[in-house]
Length: 247
Image 1 (tube, rainbow, N blue to C red):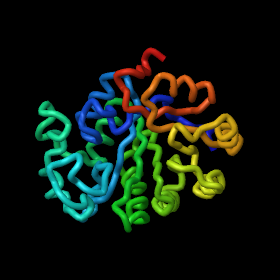
Image 2: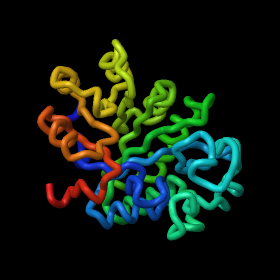
Image 3: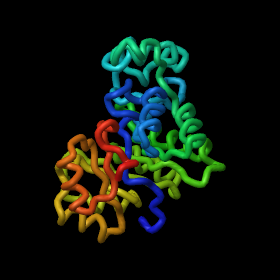
Image 4: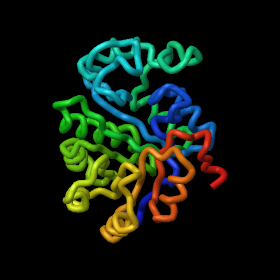
């Protein structure tokens, strides 16, 4: 499954980790300026079907809006301030759409790990729409994004809509059938909370023909341990500390 794995080892979490407002275009620009050529983002559907970037189900933490983001139309979401919560420097920063980010990544030769982050109750629809949008946006580009999710239903739907795209199963706690589930979803990778990885688990993933990726790795000691375990990808907030150019 992973013979054609095309992605770099270093992945900037939500654009630039915590140095800029997460999932905004400013964050991706900052991450790119610091040497990163792959980004992780969180994608969900607006009420009128626009794929936009937001981690939480609700708007309060990272915007000046209120309520469930997926219940709002894009015309409303596009007017929100998604930067002031972070710092005055980013006041007025808008929410980003997947289309915005796709244009940036293709223009700057960057890869993308799109975490499908459904509003509760619409996992299947979100997985299908994200996969279809990736096909549409990247149709003329040789390297397409990695789709990942904790939501099994979303990944199944993405698998059916775009079976050729690379997929990654996200895990925050270990489950007994983790390898079997990933294989049923025809995943190219398993992306774990980095604390879950052991040498035996990494070996099991590799023997199953998949890659072992880790989130969210912010300490040099943890990076060293994961590299010793022969894991294949590191998602980090510390784009200032962990410099892919130096490695």
